[in-house]
Every structure is written in C-alpha cells, then in structure tokens.
Image (tube, rainbow, N blue to C red; front, side, top):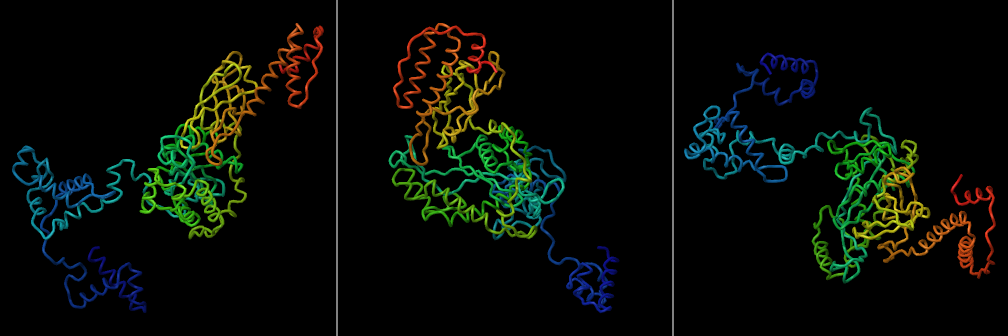
Length: 588
C-alpha cells in the first residue's frame, strides 16, 4: 500500500470514529485490525515523519541471499529426497547439495563450466551459500530461514505428484454438496438417477468351509480363514445402499466379470438401472465393464480425476462402525490390517492350522448377517446434511424407479462372468471348466440342451454364472455362422446344468443334478424319435421307437405297458405326412 493510500485509509477510519462508530467496527469495515490502526495513528500523533509507512524491520540481516538458480536447485533436491509418504527432508536436501557444491575437487570434477552468477553447473549453489548451510550450529536441522523458505510449500500434493504422475488426480479442492448435484446443470440429483460403486476390503477375517487340499488349516479343520472383497453401490442422492457383491478369490482381487455381475444382479432385483454410474479405473472401467454399461445405456462418470468417490468412502466409514457393533465377539473391524494385536496373532495361529478358525473369527454367514443388520440400520437412520437438510434413505429412495431407466433385453449376456467357446457334442452337450464362486477353485460345468442334437459339432459360445449355474443354466449361442444358421443364433437360452455343482457355503457338498440330466436326456431322445417315426416308412423301426417311448412313459407312471401287436405301417397320404411334419416341428 502506498503512503498516500494509507493516509486516506487512516483518515477514513478517523472520520467513522468521529461520526460515532466504534473503533472496532470502523477498522473491520476498512479491512484492517484495530492494532494496525492504533499503531499508525499513535505514530502520527507523536510527530513521526515516516508514520504512513512501515518501520524498517529490526534484527540482523540474513546470512545469505539466495539467487533464483539456487532456489531452483534446492527445490529440485528436496523433491528427490524421500522422508515420508508425501514429504521430503529439507535438512538432507540442503546439506547434500551444499556438500556437493563445496570443495575444489568437486569443481574440477564438474569442469570449469559455470551456471548463472558463478554457480558451478554440477551443483547449483555458490560456495558462500554452501558454507553458510554447513556452518556449525546447535543442530544440523536449524536451517537458514531463506533455505527453509525456498523448500517450503512442496510438501503434500507437489511431492506426491512428483513421485507418481497419477497421484493428485483425485485430489483438489472439494466443494461440499456438489457430489449430489448434476455436473452439467447443477440441479440436485433425483433418487435412482446416479449410483457410485467402489470396492472395500473388510479387515475382519471370516471362516469358510474348505473342500480343497494343501491348506494347513483346511486340511485339519475343514474350514479356513480368509479375507475377501466387498463390492458396494449407493445412491448418490439419498445414500441408499442399493446392493453388494462378496468376491471370494484366493488372489484377494476382483475382476471385470465380478463388477458386471454384481451390478446386473442389483439392477435386476430392483427392477431398473440408474442413468449414471460413478466408478474408478481398473476393473470398473475395463473393456468388459464398459461394454456392459453401454449395453445397459448407463453413462459412466470417471472418478479418477475428481473426488466423486467421497460419497461412498464416507458411507464405508459409517458401515464399518455399525458392523463393529453387530459382529459377534470374535469379530473385529479395524481400519488397517493387523492393527489389532490379538486378531493378528489369531490370524497367524489359524493360518498355520494350530487353531480352528471358527473359534477365532465369525463364519461367512455371521459376517453377512452383520452386514445386513448394519445396512438396515443405516437405511433407517436420518442423514443430516448442512447443505441439503435431513432425510431417511429408505423413505427418500421410495419410487426411485421413476428416475432410472428400464433394463434392456439381452443384458444378461453382457453380465455373465463366463463366456467360453466350445463345440456341441453329438448328444447336445457342452462342458466348460471355470472357477467356482468359492476361492477360485476350478470345476467342470456340463450343460445339455434339449435341441442340441440339431447342432452336433457346431461352434458355440457358452455363457453362464457359476453362482447360479444350477438354477439358471447357461446361454448357448452359435459362435460363427454354421451351415444355414447365422452367428449369434441362440440354441438354448437356459440350458440346464447336469454336472455336480459345487455348493460350499451351507451345506458343504455338491448339488445332485442327476434327475435334471435324466429329464433332459429323455426329452432330447423323444424329440429325435418323433422325427424318426415321422419319416420311417418301413414300419418296424417306427413301431419299435413308439414302443420304447410308451415303455418309458409307463415306467414313470409305475405301470407295465402291454406289448403292442406288430403290424405293417399303413401308407400315409400327403395330408398325414404334413401333419406329422408339423408335430415334429419341422414346418410351421
């Protein structure tokens, strides 16, 4: 501020005070403190010739004045140092740079070339600056004020971004309340319009049945302890917990098929899909996931470059707190793995097989039950926002389907985790080896189509979900054009699974599919026999096929069929041939 501007400011404050305004109010209106005004007004009354300006600073001058090149060198060296997660070491940066700059041997090593103002090109500090930094003091950490100021401000985001170019993309100024608004118009989001999804790794271990071999704990107790991942989604407008998936893999990771599967299951159960989803990178934006979003007509909002994940991260904080209440006594939610000493020791003991995991950790059923109770509590608890007021998620989410969009037909194919190409066997069967929902163990799933006998040897794509293979079967479609059929022709939209299906959760064992396999086989054989009988003119073969079908039907009823008399097959008219063809499904 110029002296004349200060004179005018002091005069205006004096006029306000003379008009009856308090000194504090007048100074606040002028944008200065009462102490600042009193000091300069007192100096004016004392006849100080330099009263409008600031008095010269007292104290000794700084030991060194840094040149711009030296400031740049210190900052570069500070960013290279690595003391913490997002900070360097000022002491080490300044002293190493000074040591490299001091000494004639270093100068000779770098050559005679010099930087600006006589700075050695190899170091970046003048000899006098280096000597001032390395001068003996009570502590080496007592750096010169100009040196410390040169490196100040690089802590945090600058250092993190220097070490990892991707760091800081999710950082930045957070605008409270904006996450519940539309990005383009700024209006408040409607319930059901946008969902945010993310993964979480609950730190509590769970005990699960184990049918494999090679695990010390599983081999001894039949159970093992493990930690898995939770995929969750909430509604951005209401904090409504819309759905979750629990991924159980030995690799402790989830994949794109898990992302598409849990979203599809959630949207199918609620009857609609949101218009937008907020997701991070990785599996959430893989090729399979993006294809699923596109097929569903859902717009993707990238959370990698903005703090859009803060809504669900805040929800996780509340969820873990609630779960720590509802979990049984042997369950403990910590924010970091191994943070609780007792649980860490129990973990090591269980993994070695010394203790039964059920005595130390909750079972998977107990964990999921606690999760449901915690979610139910949060759905009924009032959300208090300074920006948007108060609301109850369950009540606010009622009628959310009006703001979403219907699920398109054929979306199931994009969400099924397994998609394998096989060839149809002569009896209409296909077999695919895939990971089970439990721990990623591999199992061979066999499917049989009632109409598969028509496509023997055809290349097909088998799509199914191992979690629901026993109930929903598999979708079988032609992988390529085959004979007179186009690629993509659906052979069976729900081919039943006829192999033993792993069911590890409760009870332990395999689901028996032999009855289903027998029904499919009888149906397939009956269809073939109908066609054979329709076109057999010799009589004897046709009657034998009909007699076999009658025996099967009578056996199912518990009766003994009578032996039919053998006779020649009558000659059929054109009308009778047409009727038989229609019955066989060969003509419309």
